[in-house]
Image: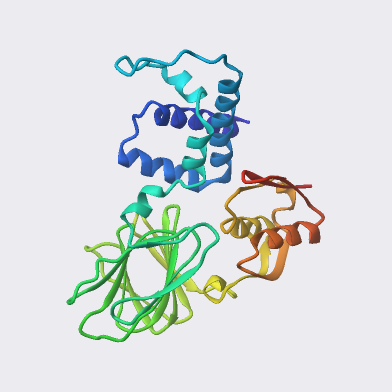
Amino acid sequence: MTDIRAIDEAAARWRAREMSGRLSPEDAQRLDDWLAADVRHRLAYADVAAAGFALEQALPDAAPLERHAPRRWPVWLGAALAPALLLVAILWTPHAWQDLRSDAHTAIGAVVAQRLPDGSKLQLDTDSAVALPFAPDRRDIELLRGALAIDVAKDPAHPLRVHCAGIEARAVGTRFVVARHAGEVEVGVLEGTVAVRASDATEPTLITAGQRALVDTGSGVVRSEPVPALAYGWTRGVLSFDHAPLQQVVADIARYLPEHVAFRATDRGATAVSATFPIDHPEAALRAIASTNGLTIRHVPHVLYVVED
C-alpha cells in the first residue's frame, strides 16, 4: 500500500507542476521517463487528471476572465481542473517535443523502414524517434526513444555510429538493433561486429553476431549475453514469444496499442507463453492471450485496456 500511495503522491506532484507551467525541458524529460517506467505511473497520472476533469464538469460555469487580468489558481486546484485534451496530449503523446526535433519518428503501433543517404536501411519500431545528423564525412544517428534496426551500407572510411543516452554503437558494415530502455541501452548484433562504447573515456566492447550488449546508462557498465530466442521479431513484422512470462508478453503487446494496458492478474504474471502474432493486429493479439489464459479484458475505448482474472 505504501508503494501505491507514493506513486499517487508523485503523480499528483507531477500533475500540479505541469498545470502550473513550471516544467523546464529537463523536468519534462524526467516526467516522460517516469511515465514510461511503469504502467502504474501512467494509470495514477491518468486518475489524477481524470478526477480533475470530473470536478471541472461538476463546477458551475464561471464568468469569462478579462484578458489583462489572468486568474492565478493555487497549484493544487490547477492540478484538479485538468482539461481532458491536455490529458490526451501528455499521456497519449508524451514525446511530442522529441518528434519536433527528430528527422524521423513513428506513431504508436507503426513500424517503418527507409533508406538513408548512404544506402543503409533504417527500421524504426513503434513509438520511436531518431535524429539524423548525416554529413559527407560522417554517418551519425541519434536514437531519441524507442528502438531501431540498421542494415549498414559498407563504407570503411566512414563508420556508422548510433548514439543513445551517451552510449555509442559503431559499425562499418553490419546489421544490428539499438533499443532505449529505462536506465539501459540495448545493442543486439544480427550480423558482423559492433563496437559499443559506454563513454568517451572507456574502451569499446566488441559485440559479435548473436550477442547483445546491455549498457547501464548510469554506471556505464556493459554486460554481454546471447540474443534471446525470437528477439527483435518486430523487424520481421511479428511479435514472437518462447516461454516468456505472461506479464511481459502483455507489456510487449501493449507497446503497439495507443491505449494504456493495465495487467491486474499479477498472480498469473509468471505463466509461460509461447506464441507468434502479426505486429499490425495488437488488439487481436491481446485478446487471444487473455482468452488462452482464462483472463478477461475490460476496454474503455481510446483510453484503457484492463487485463484481469
